[in-house]
Image 1 (spheres, rainbow, N blue to C red):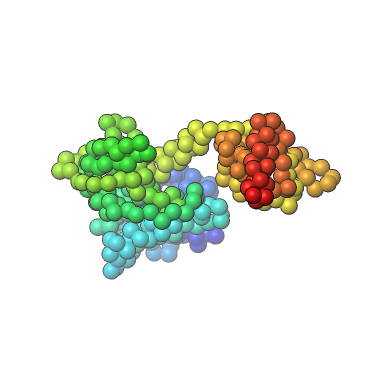
Image 2: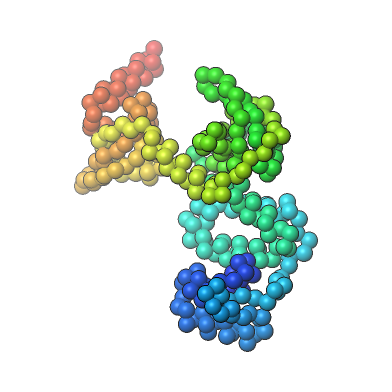
Length: 316
């Protein structure tokens, strides 16, 4: 573990220039005394590390001490930075491992690519948790991407369900949700999200814009996603289902289990939350005789009515 920590200290100093003992201790979750011992070990091994005294001081490496990764092209660097899903890595318990690998890769980049690495992270965010699979046509995606790199305003037509609207936007980033691409942009000072497959006739304008200094694409997308889920319609109900379908029910996207109570016969009573009456009826019919509605009676009557209609259809 100490060898890994020494490598981490070296990379942190290469990437950030100068850090105090307290900053290093907090980042590596060790005591300040441990950091001092690690610095002595680095110095003894020949690493040119030194301490700047005073209020603005800290630990630093001798200027020019860096390992360069030769032959790395900008396109190759971008591919490496984007070829991961932070949420999936965290689910697997590999989030900290990726961060260390990222620091190693960033430290190895030539100086000319250091700024580009941060630009990539701020402008493209990959959200690997898909809502559903979709093969969409994206003819305007290259133009949108070019406008984002250039910080240029973008003129586009956006196809809504009821009409086509024209917009001039300040494109800030692209987000991939599963296989669906979204454009995050600022319009007249307000943040907007556009589904790229509905964008038409995108055109880069000569006018550039000032990117908000505090804007973080990943943070914005997470907040936007939470708001979207919070604003979904809710239809509460109480159901009873056989325990053999519990796994299927837990995987339902449009039904949320709230509270469950099991009985001795292998059945589970649960308070659940659907989105709408229509979707609740469709979901319950899909479980056949393995699930039934207890409340509300409106949903029970709807399921019974649909079941009778299905029987009549097959009899006919």
